Structure formats: structure tokens, C-alpha cells
Length: 297
Length: 277
Image 1 (cartoon, rainbow over the protein chains, first blue to last red):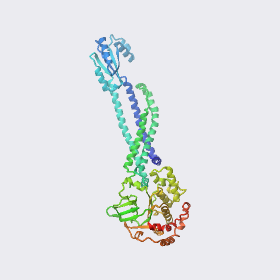
Image 2: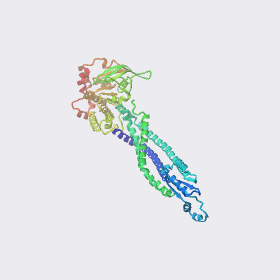
Image 3: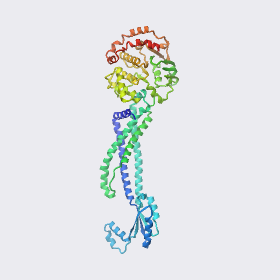
Image 4: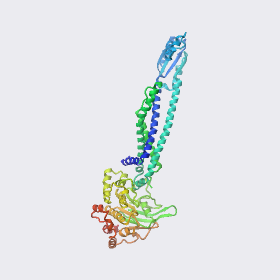
């Protein structure tokens, strides 16, 4: 990249400032949308991670299981590498918890003659096991004849994973389409710039300019448009985070018990900037190749 | 040395622009390429800077074939050639300095060196003080001076001018020819000028290559004995008074720069050299 190419590229942007602003705006919009999607996905993934840390399997004990057998099973399960801890919940404790969880329930329960709830072992699994298939796999290995029933929050974990997977996929598809559209616009902008500088390109050839001497300013121009679009997006995203996401969290946070909504990490922001540059580079590069810029005539 | 070896150039099946051209131009010569419109002058020059390829035959510069040059090598050939066109081919959005600097920009010359060289050449062509103007703010003659400055700024060994005065009136035409001759004499550059301006052709005593319908014509000096110096003196005397009046207004810079080279006196002084080459 010669100083001439850089000077010529920025001069080109000034010469076509309206088109340049439109292109920068489009790249910025695409990256803001992409960034917003990433904000949602990052935070939902974070949420899933936090929930995932609580992957727990409840093993409900038959009534006839004696203390000795119970301790043996508890020790066995505790020794499994996937397990963090095993806690025994007695029938009384289960009843107490149930009463606390539902308002007014304790009075109803007090009227009961006997405790209908079984005692259980609550097995906490390692967070790496949060994928539904692996939880199911571990659960099957936990299974013992002494257990009347087993329960793990399989259904919602699965649903949440499916939802997040769909969200990621749609972000990927939409992101690719939007990036392609931005690339196409850069390509068109550069093609118009090439067209308007036909005479200049002819003269460059006549005075001995090589192909890449003629082409580089256009490629630099495309990268500058993409890079500037990315900078605009990086300036807008924190505002969007502050005024939209944090506000949204304030009203929904309690409901979802999400904790704080986090802004995009620095590597992701760098990634967005690189994506802007790449869109500009590819758009401009394909344009100079297709327009045959600098080919000797 | 430039050599055309049995060069033929055809466009399509029937359009013959050049036919069987055999020609040698020695290094440091000033040569006119003459002929009416469509005679093949421009095609002959285009073959030199590889804007066209011969249909058959070969064109050699310093023994190297231009016709067989790989397209990627063409820019390097052109860096050693300066080309001047009838329509100037200047960049209207750029200043005189930027236009003249372009051939040095393409070679990656350092900026300080570009600035020094451009200033020198602009002064040489008599445009001192006009470096920041754009072509649209200059007269036709001045624009062609800018084009000539651009052609010589890279110190090429060959300068090619294709009807450089076709858009200019007689007074400006003579100025441009004087400038080309001056640059030729200063640097020993080989100069080829395509023209059909008979007044100028009569004024200057240089080798002429005459073309008619794409063939070399006997009317050129190539087929005639070169005129003796005495004859040239007569020519000079005859042509002398003609260009004088229109020179004064725009030539101040030039005269300042080169007090000892009176353009009108030069061709006569140079005759023996030209005759020898």
C-alpha cells in the first residue's frame, strides 16, 4: 500500500462523498444489526451457562430403601467423575420446601395425615454436561432399582438449546445475507468510481503505471468505506446497549432472573471491525478484478 | 535505436493501417512522421508504446521486441517513453504539479525527489508560477506544455508526440515545436513527432518519415539526400521571420531559464549533427 494509493483512495471518497456516505451507512447498519444479534446471543448463552451450572438430577427413593443401602448408593454416585455433589433430601425437608415454594400451600399441607412426598437424592452435575444428550446419558448411569423415579430438567434445557440454536442459525443466515448485501454495495460503489475515473486509469497506463498501481487505490477505498462503516457501528452499539438492552433488562430482568446484561467482549468488537474491513476489501477487490482495471490497452 | 522490421498492421480483414514498414531511427534523432489523416502516423507511434501490436513484423527498441512484450512488462517500457497527445490527456481535477508528477508517482519515486523534479520541469516548459492551476484554467498551449512536462519528467530516452499541435493555432504550434526541439537538444532525447503541419515541417530541418496509405513514401527525407547545411540556412532564413511575433508574450519564463538557447537559432546550428545521425 503506497502513500499514493492511500491519498488517492481518500480523495476518491471525497469526490464521491454522497455515495461514500450511503455505503458507510449501509456497512454500519449491517454491523449494528449483527452486533445487536450478537448481544442477544451472547447474553442468552451466558444465561444458559449460568443455568447449566445448576444441572441437577433428582432421584426419588422408594420408601423401602434402608439407611445402609442409601449411604452405599450416595457414596457410589459421589464417586462418579461427572458428579459434583450429592445431597439427601428427606421427606420432611421436601414437604417443607414445597410449602415454601407455593404461597398458602403450607396450611394445606399441614392438614395432611401423611407426607406424600418421597425422599430424594439431588445430584449436581458438572457444568460441562449441560447439553441435554449428555445429561440424559449420565442420568441413565445414575439409575438404580432403589429409585422410584428420576427427574432432570431435560425438557426446558432442550427447548432452550433448540431456541438458542435457531437464533444462532438465523443470525448466521441473516448476517451472511446482510454482509453479502453490504459487499455488493461496496462493489457497486467501487465500480462507479472506476467508471468515473476511466480517463485517469488510461493516463496511468500511458505513463507506465502497473495494474496494481491502478487497482490499489480502489481496494484501499473499499477497505476505508468498510472500516469507516465498522467504526460508526462500534460507536452506535454501546448506545444501543445502554439505551435499549439495559432498559429492556430493567423491565424483564426480574422476570428472567438474568443477572446483568453484558456488552460485547473486546474480541467480538474487534471481529466486527475486521468484518467491516473484509466487506470493503472483498467488495472492492472483486470490482477491480471484474472491471479489469489496469489491464494494458 | 528504434527499428521497424517489415511491420504490417491490419484492422479486421480489409483495413490496412501500415504495410511493410522497414525503418530505423537512431538514438538521439528528432524525426517527423508526416502524412495526411489516415496515413498511419498514429498507428506507427502506437506500435512503439505498445498500445497496438503489429499484425506481422516486429518493432524493436534498443534491440528488444515491443511486439512480443508481455502485457505485464508494458508499463516498464512506457516508463522509458514520454507520450504527448493532440488532446493533451490531462487530469482535469488535478493541478499542473499533480499531472506532471504522475509518471514519477507510478515508479514510487520519493516525494521530495518528485517535488524537486516537477518544479524543474515545469520551469523548463515555461509554466513557472502556474503549478497550482488546473488544466481548465490554462490556455491550450499551456495545457500542451503540461503534457510535455509530464512526458519528459521521468527523463525518458524517447518522446513520442502524436499531432501535439492539432488543437492549437499557428503561434502556439510553433511554441510547442520549439519546446520539443529544445528538450531534444538539452537531453539528447529521441523525439518522434507526428504532424501534417507543413509550415512547421518547412521550418525545421529534421528527418522526415512520410507515410501514405500505410506505406513509406519517397517524399520523406529517408529517400532523399539530406539537405546541405547551406540549404538549411536558407530555410532558416526563410522561416525565421514567421514565428517571431507570436513568441514574445508567453515565452518570458523560457527565455529566463535558457538565455543561451534561442529556439529559432537552434535548428540551423544543429543541422550537421542531425545530418550525421
